[in-house]
Amino acid sequence: MKKINIAIDGPSGAGKSTISDILASKLGYIHLDTGAMYRTVAYMGLKAGLKMDDEENIVKLISTLSFKQTEDGKIICNGVDISKEIRQNEISMAASDVSKLLGVRKALVALQQKIAEDKGYIVDGRDICEVVLPTAEVKIFMIASAEERAKRRVLQNKEKGIEANYDDILADIQKRDYQDSHRENSPLRKTEDATEIDSSNLTIEETVEKIMEIVKTKL
Ligand code: DC
Image (cartoon, rainbow, N blue to C red):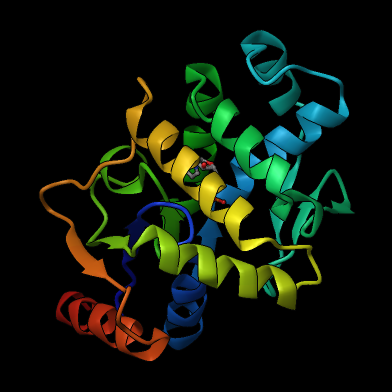
């Protein structure tokens, strides 16, 4: 069957990752989590003692990183599994900080475009519909209320054994929403050709079903 690319954008915690994983297993596609790439850069940068606005050195650092995502969703950087570390709250904000830098975006976008070249990818992020895969056959913009997203992230973190406080996570989500949608380089916004799906009152299955209906028309 013909393979396509599916672009999924939206704010943090809207369910992009969960939905992308399910779609990937239904379709036999690969889910590329671009947020994990920005998180990896932030984590490795902090570990190297870099400031999150030190564009020159962060871009240099990226050229030394090998980024791998395993089939079961683990994030491996330079051979080390950093899946858990990059989900910590301070890394979320640091990732949002490095993602403002043009040099960082250029390097990661080029990498993402190379990976998804062969089709058969579900790519989730903030700038996928507009910048990374402007020719993707399916474009989705997922949203949900900040409160619902904070509730989900608390549950998700608890399941992963990461400490989670609702108020801190809600404040972090609101701050990142603002930062991600007001930055100069590739701010988060819905493109005209993307279908908006508000998952606040939908189950995971209902959300997947809605996207699958769109996907089926393109296969
Ligand atoms: O999706 P996430 O929460 O894991 O993303 C972490 C940060 O990375 C987010 O605050 C914004 C940034 N990001 C981005 O700018 N562009 C992407 N394609 C993906 C993530």
